[in-house]
Amino acid sequence: MHYWQPPERPEWLSAFLKETQAWDANAVAPLQADEMIATAQRRTGLTDFGPDYWREPFEILVRSAEEEADMHLFGRLWTRQELILFLETRLKIEAEYKAHPEIEDEVIDQPVFITGLPRSGTSILFELLAQDKQFMAPANWEFLLPCPPPEATTYRTDPRVPRAHDLITQPGRVAPTFRSMHEMGAWIPNECAVAWRMTFRSPHLAAAFQAPTFATWLFSADQTPMYADYKRLLKLLQWKNPRERWLLKSPEHQSFLPTLFKVFPDAEVVMTHRDPVRAQGSVINLLGTFYWMRSDKPFDAQAYEQLLTPEGTAARLDQVIDWIEGGAVPADRVIHSRYADLVDAPVQTLESLYEKLGLPFTEQARGAVEAYLSGKPRHKFGAHHYTVDQADHTRALFSRYQSYFDVPSEA
Image (cartoon, rainbow, N blue to C red; front, top):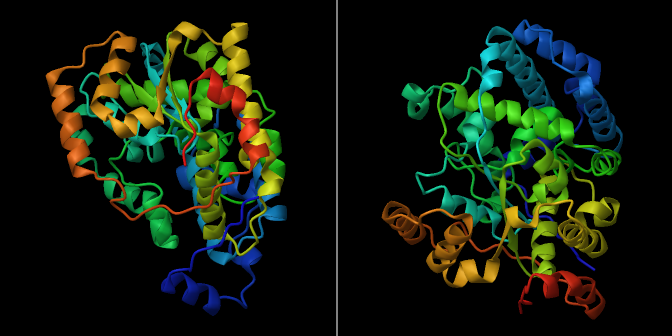
């Protein structure tokens, strides 16, 4: 069993919450689906959100957040701001496609997706591969503020970057311990699930606040619309700023691999593998911190069986094996990388990975990777401390996964 202790709040947030404790948070920061939709339309002057498959999850999300998340005033303000931003982004993307239907003709050619358990090395592998000019990873800022579409001539000087950076780094100011868990910034490549938020089907939204009704709906839903919208976004981003080969990443892809290959049939997937007991302890601490940013409500891991319990994690890992063995996922397009190898010998691990991808590991890539590693020592922003469930019955849940992918246990 995992026990999670919330970190201390920063002084500015504690003072804000104390000063506003007598306010009516529901009145100051309303979370009502129809009102937020109308607000986004009024602010943009646009009305067309495209096909309405976003509406059901949006309404479930808002209702679940209102009824279950028990957010404090700052959490409600933050959530309202984000949801309206995502609605506005949907409106703007539809407007771009309507004005420029030729965007649909863009081709997403052989993208490389990185996935694996959360906290299994997907981020560092993503950042290392992004040093190679053969790939183009989406910058954090363009996922958050994609309209108007970025242009090659002004990509590095785009005036949206400062605003995006401020929004992207906000979690580290709300909960400073988060900085030791995940480095954030406008130019750091970010996860596909960040972009999925505008579809209101992203697991990142389930991780933002305690809304188990939404989380339950999410993991039983058909995610084809989410991937289809994501493909449209990538086309938009490369329209005026061409990308030779997209490098993309999200741990959540692991739960939706058949759908990923349905929408991106020529994709290559790199799956990272780490001792799931160790990874499990890390992700529980991460999610607990996320929830604490917006609420004083005690963290209930059992309410998120699909996300958090060892049984739920083991079931998802076993499902990946079943997909591979049953042919639902093309085994020859899935390449495996162990976290232990990446930590112990990162350059050699990348050499092997490139060979499996059928790509050259160029001198430019090698030099850039070595420079990046030398400038980013482990625990640069402080060590990430968390508890680990080492019970025998927990370890036994993952025996099939660890045996199948030859994943060593960590002390």
